[in-house]
Image 1 (spheres, rainbow, N blue to C red):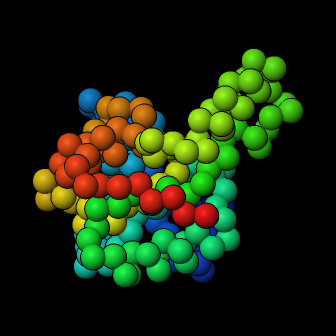
Image 2: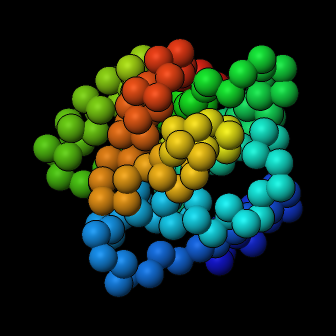
Length: 171
């Protein structure tokens, strides 16, 4: 985590590393609970929720070099915050030749499915104000900490809160 922070620190206003405690009752260890914990940590740092975007990624996620520029440009001209930004993701190809054949086939199938996905997958970005809206005023309540599939679960929570929430695919 520290190596990633150092690598990307100069490219963002702030890169925060938060470590989810392992002893929080009712929270399943995983990306969903890590995301909830990180939202709890950043809540006191955000002074203007309407100008903040939260990016969620795995450590091996790969972005197009202009993804963040494109997200920021779209965010600045939007009339609302009813959006989940989704980079065009190629899943499972980083280690494709070092895994069993069955895993390769599964990975290829998932990659084909992600060409035009109906739900966000793995790596996504939300306006902080939208996360607050989904969480009824508290962004950390937008995501359930006991859910492993945080990506589409969060989007479905958002759709239930506001059916106009849309996925915008960027490079």
